[in-house]
Amino acid sequence: MPFKNLKDIEEKVIYPGYKAKFIHSENITLAHWTIEEGSSFPEHFHENEQILSVLEGKLELRIGDKTKILKQGEAAIIPPYIAHSGKAIKKTNAIDVFYPLRRDYF
Image (cartoon, rainbow, N blue to C red; front, side, top):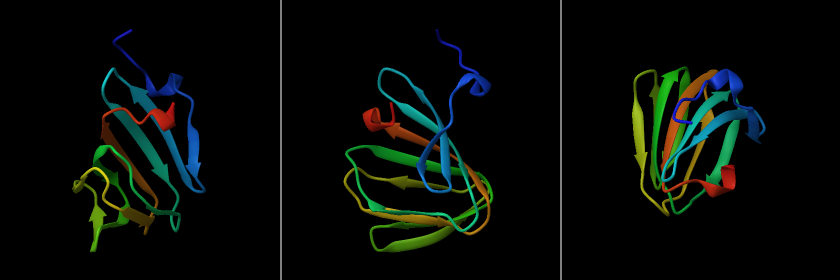
């Protein structure tokens, strides 16, 4: 089915305070995140290229040795195998796109 409704997708807790709804195509994973203020995710890396876009809120993101606080309308590109971590400064809604698929999110 080519059409999805977020209301019909089960929300999963990935880290404490980080909930997401995932849509998977043949090659891409799309994540819709709801992140509670003060919640953080640990430094990690993966084989996937990732683009993160903040829809609302503030998210401090560290990619390699660079750190930036992303606000509404800002995005970051995270190359494969580059360590990254983050923390929600305010409650945040964001979208991540991963290529190839994030099979660990199935």
